[in-house]
Image (tube, rainbow, N blue to C red):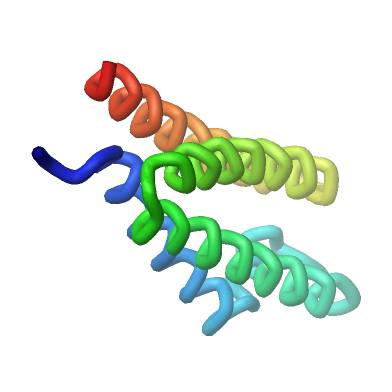
Length: 123
């Protein structure tokens, strides 16, 4: 018998890598959002929060039993969509808004696809 939820666990590795990146280089978010000097500290704090969240949820999905993988994937999808709402609302520029929406919704769709594939495979 193989690993349960292999696609969900695999995409969780990528999310964990982002979590580490966000913690090591939190300024990436302010750069991507083209934040002004007065907004950078807030974006750095947000990036660190994303890093902690993504790393912890990803570790649950990578190392945990099936029920924790399910919880982690649902949490990640909800988090990605919440990130979209947060970042799109904060962006002043249309291109930045579009990029933020594409990246966050793109990750939500990838996570949903992996989770759905795993669920169908298990049925």
